Image (cartoon, rainbow, N blue to C red; front, side):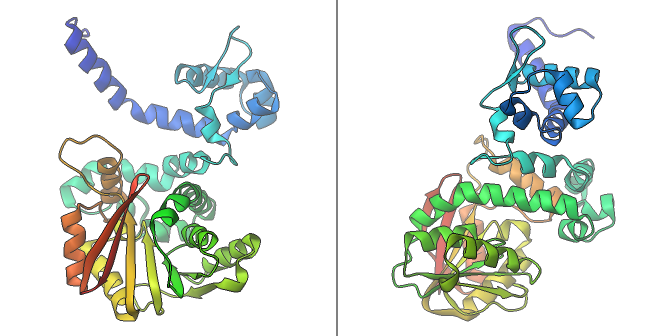
Length: 341
């Protein structure tokens, strides 16, 4: 079978070829991250041989990897011997403000990679494939016994939160709020950004007991410890009282029943006149390009959760005796505020 000659057919052929082989690119980027190509090139190394020696990799395979990276726009070479990193490769620096280093490692590692390998089964059954791929009930159970991979995932979420936190804090009013609680907030980037904007605000993180020490350390490092609190617990059981709850990237992990349980726990503990702020991606019109429909597929295959349209959020709120009162956009996210109905 030969490639089509009609220009439109040829374009579709090439586009589909890129889609089918997209997983090759994922693993090339994983190798670029794992072997620290961005950091090595930034430090002054320029040849595959230098990097191979530093990383204990095969020199010829490293040369071929860097040639492939150049074809993807990650680096350039003027003489086929020496390489220079591009601004695209800069996103794989560990400490870059917009770093995707840990995201590249976590998404291509076995926890996600092997589960995604069973994606057609997720469509057939409507169930996530973590248990089928790994034998664990959830991806979070898998991470509990694969700590290095768990650390990649945690760091990747931290990187994404750092980028988003300022945007979210800028649109979420906190005047008159006594306590804002980041529910499932890990290290509390969003709540700390809100506290930096409002020097009167007391904030905190409510998360699983083994996670909250990270938030306490981060608040201490930021000089916010005197206004910051951490509480360990399970948001499916009970949530401490607060004036404002922030749930960033929480509801999309869970099915509707579990989301309603979380929201009901918020509603029952909400201080009179308080608000619940849900921060998630918003599903748009059919055929609208973007990241959200792809993230929805990730939720289908990995957690059993989903991305939602506004009508679906409203249904969750109604089931939890809440009502939507305000919507703002914060970068790629939507910030939906709700109060007791």
